[in-house]
Length: 385
Image (cartoon, rainbow, N blue to C red; front, side, top):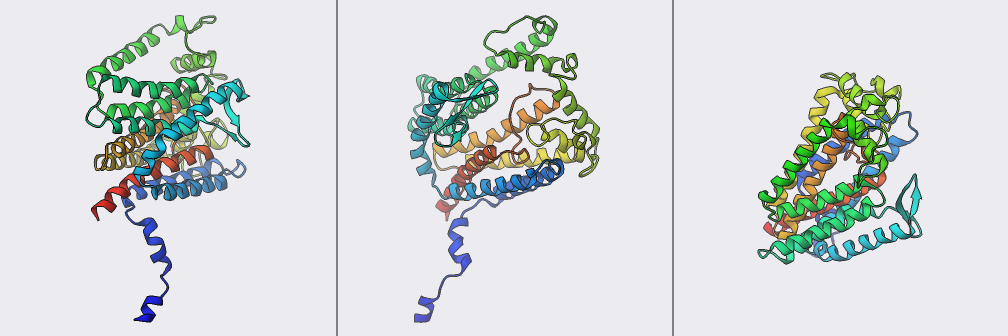
């Protein structure tokens, strides 16, 4: 009996608490998409320096963060919501006042190392809004929704001021998802959707006039106006502003049903696709794997989103439910915006395709988000056990 007491635990016995309660279906979806990202990066980045190796390293970093954050209980995440949001907004204000400007945009801040504070708000904003509605569980009134809107609009406007409309829209959408799942009524949503459809129709109908030289739009920077006009008719400047969109659509169409094959994409490897390892990686993916590969990728994202929403539905608290739902729908926003801009149905903005696009910062954000989602799933499973 004394020998049994002194017996050293095995490695699995030591690691078991780390993996206990993990949602295996969520992890399966993550690993399948990560594998697809590595295969894609090997092809599109083989002559692009160390992109494939770096992408693999970034994925390992993201997975490491996923496992670490998954150990943090949702109650602790709730306590971190206000400090993270306050710190993120303070850094955005500091960026506005003292930030580093590159290519006309002030998005970076030197705090010993150069950081991009807007990335923090992709996570801090839904955390904060979920915290707000958790405090008012069952008692949310119109004034509470108004405060939630203010919490979302503050970082959005600060980021849009940099200007970085792409990141700003991601922050805005993450916060709005929390507000929607907190009980925002459809009678308030439908007028906005109708106004959006009418506005898009008006843009298309008056494209020749509003996109004429010398016409300035209010509230938008010149480059943002150019992106919208390029979306409406990229053929007006096929070798300039419209080049990205045209080449992306050509690559997607040339893939056909089954694609040209791994490492055989001509648009990709003859370097017609700009930013083929980052923003326009979907065009390269579609060219090599075709409609079949594209549908598989979309099914992978759909599985991840639906699994996340199921975790949200089973979450034990209002905070966990709202946060899990917002994180899950954020994957939809990333995928929809990236694929939409590459396909020519949305303006070109700097939004990466999760798991597929190259980028260390994006992978860190992805790992943190998935870690919080896994933490919520674990808390439910551990409570049941």
